[in-house]
Length: 130
Image 1: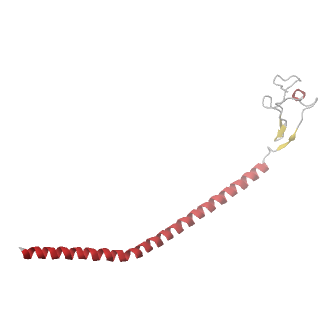
Image 2: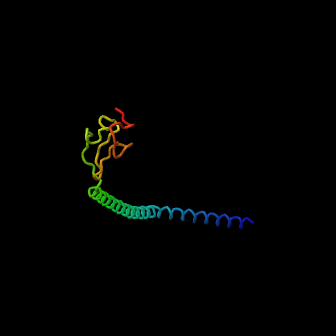
Image 3: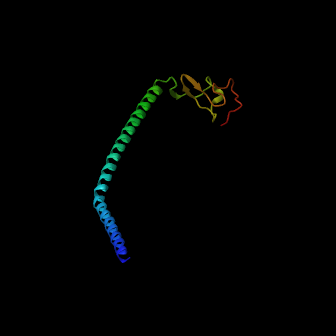
């Protein structure tokens, strides 16, 4: 009986010894595994940043192109604001001194005010305010 117990104990010690050796062997490989993981992460991150940079550059180019086209369209538009036209006795006399008078020309059309875009026909506008 004593002999069997000794063999089992020695087998257990041998098993523990193998596990300890295996653990330390893995620990020796750990720095190399960590370095490999770091290199792989750096490569992946570099690739992702490059793709992100390209996407940002494409977006910026698209936006600049859109802004340039919009500016060209706006400059070609008929609806350019010109100088202000002031009312007098011959042109929109009911609007003289009115706080609602706008008087700017858009696309060749005078915009008199919000209530009466084309002005009032006689000298007594019902919406006139000083």
